[in-house]
Image (cartoon, rainbow, N blue to C red; front, side):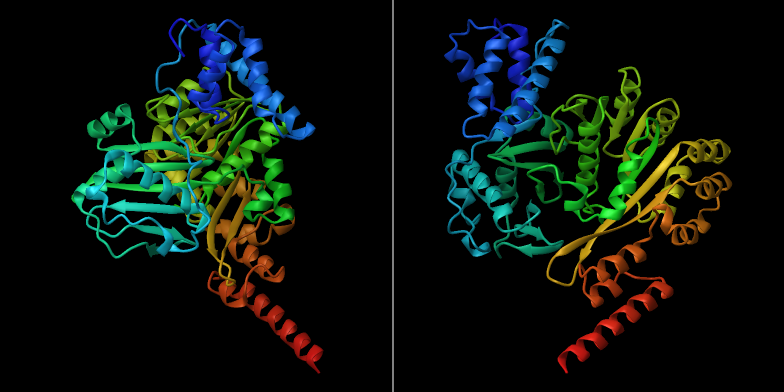
Length: 491
């Protein structure tokens, strides 16, 4: 869009690209087809006609609702008098229409990276587009390119090498910078770290680049191509009921925790989508970077990216409290001020949903409290006991059938749990969760037992994740009953 384009049209085109509905080029071409004389309503109508080709009536109605939300956003932004800055869209976009994946069935079918030194910049970029496009076809979740090491992917949490060729410092730098525009390259050179979103066709990636002793290293995480439901992620129906109840509160703190690669961001997106569909509120989400796009449905959703739209989680959370939110989603709570502001916000009429890198519910509470000075901890314990709604701690583990499954524990803030938090006796939390199964809580061991009983895990895979002797005894008893029944059926 040119500077003389009406502000509401500029913001609408920006919102279309930002939400992945149309690329900047397509939006500009569509606007030019109207001879740049139409108003926002005409432009929006042309966009709807473009997006609704070959869609069912139900899908067309959804597109109309989503485009209307973008129109409202454009009008709101245009009223400020400011124009979107060049490159404001959070993700870099590339077209993958020419990629032929019909012959890609294994790593041997991927394009080689051993000849990168002889390729032009355009050819390197094309090679990267093709390589990344193949990830979903091969069932990979991550691609890693680093100088001094062969390229490798992560599939079902296992590291697998694509080639024996070791990338040179020069190869790695050219590959990792090939898809960056000049603005992003400059940002990387200044900070020596860069997190951003990248779109190739319909695939979206979380890209993290860093400078290290062997040159530039890059990791490319393939983001799910749709917002999954909690059931699709692996939560059992009986537990989904309790998780959804946590999202009905109008204030309080809900934490999604687990190690890196446990699917916390995906769960967070699923929970945000539930709120977006069932409530009519203002959601402010702060992420690093924005991974899964949330179009405004019944809620107004404002997604902010660290480094692009705000300086840090701490700054964004403080600012969010002045922007009339009902729900605040924090991609990562890792410093004292962010945690303190989150707890305060949860006490003052906001539902706050955030993530922490912790292994279980007890460690989550310890981590939450231990960042504060000793003199402040009694006060924080009291605040947390009153504001905490629940903790969902999860991890992905082998299911024994060649895939992965989600196991988790759920802690709900009952009166007993609130007393444990306020008294600082988190060592009692595990036993309380074990005996509160009927209230909606579960431990990892109980979740694994349930998944085994439903045939979602093998006995060996389940035993590898269990610690509680009583639960292990229940699993072995169930296994023995099944073996006895199987022998009876064979006779």
